[in-house]
Image 1: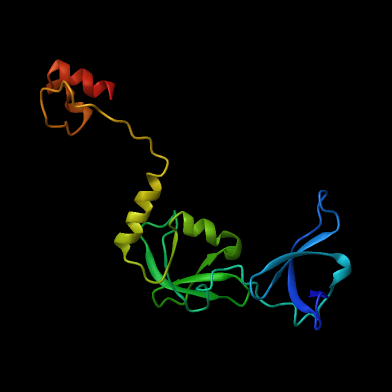
Image 2: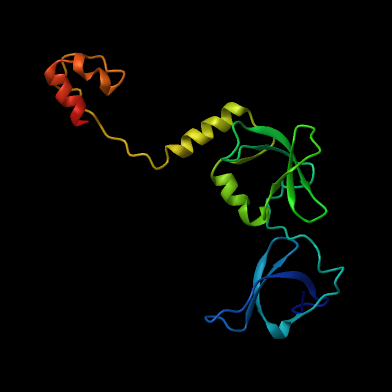
Amino acid sequence: MYVHTHSPPSLGKIIGIPTYQTPDIYTVVFKDGSISEYTEDLLSAAPRQMSSYKSTLLPSWVKGGANTTLFLHDMSKPKHGTLQLGQDDNWYFHAGKSTQGTLLPDLSANIQSLLDTGQIFRGHTKFKTVYDTRTQLGLRHCVLRHVSAHGLISLIAPTSLKARRNMNSDDKSIWVAA
């Protein structure tokens, strides 16, 4: 789409259509990643070959050939590889030197979620860092409780609560309450 606010008009892509709350407003993203809202009278169709540019809603490091570490939830371990944009305009992850890629559906919409959940990393990240990130994300919603050691006879914590049958009765009641 052309946006006729300057001369020459700017080339953009519509990413939001009018709603009940804003019945005449379109949301447009430009090549530089900026997003603005315009009324229909400021927009006009661009020639087909010019309107097919790629939106820059992806982080700047997401490019064809970019080194990436991927650890999707259905993978047994992380993999190093590269991102490639297929001829079908979908992004693929190619592990190692593989020519077969793993489809990353609608990457521009899902990239932030993949980053936030520790499933995709920029560059060839050390696997220890990937595992540590996943562990930290798993603990994000964990509830920790304080156990007071006051009154314990044994100062050594049990390896599990199954060992409580071997504990002193006072220690057992403190650990069970925890």
